[in-house]
Length: 372
Image (cartoon, rainbow, N blue to C red; front, side):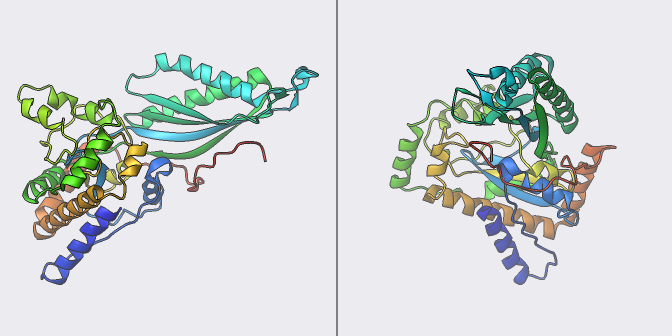
């Protein structure tokens, strides 16, 4: 986004005023959420010529992302049946909505028999209609399947497919399995993470006005205690023996301090299409405090802060860190080689396999209220 653009422009300015040679590539990457834009780009070879990729993500904290993320896959299940009057001749009907509900029940029983790190989410995106006195001929549900690696996602996906086919058999309907997108787990790179962290320490964090602090406190008070991504991510650190001072800092409305750099022992409980880039070239990213404390991603609180001065200051800070790290890599190409060696070591005999089939095209999610 804008923070990465700020970093690219800063690095461009450096190259214009210094004899160091190099190429800066800024890639606008659409639809991280729900679309996996970078995965489609990776499939088409957009990242193949990069030596290194650096990026950032809005957060409530300032720090370096470390550790992996969950791979995921998103898919529609569309059930087609036969409409009928629910009182006069229900025996002639074949309910797509019944199939959706039976599929969901089947998946609930599946949860016991998959790895504990996996997640299966769903939303009924089309119930067929609004009239209860009609057998609904159509039903549609959107599933999102997550697991630590793509092979595990695909294994669960095949089992969910079988459940969908079983629901169709039970209801006398036909099911269409409509693959939307997928993204790979993140391959971390310690060499790049350490460079980013050193620059986060060197560059001054944003300062905030009384008005900004008041606004931050008001937003924070609309949230309960953070129970989501940040708490799961940093709970291990906050419970350590030397974390008393850090835990106290986590009570402030704006977390205007730098988190210590540490390596996660388990994947972050979320997904990102940055993961696909990280299989192709050494990749690392930072988090910058664009949101006030306790803000949950995908919430109205996050939206309300999106164009605030707090968010603007964070993206400028992120851009400065990315540019400074880019300069380090240009002036010290041995870091690039070390980062590449680390990636090769982490992948071992593996190589990038795009999780999106070649015949799948990017699209936006269309939520329909009835059959067209």
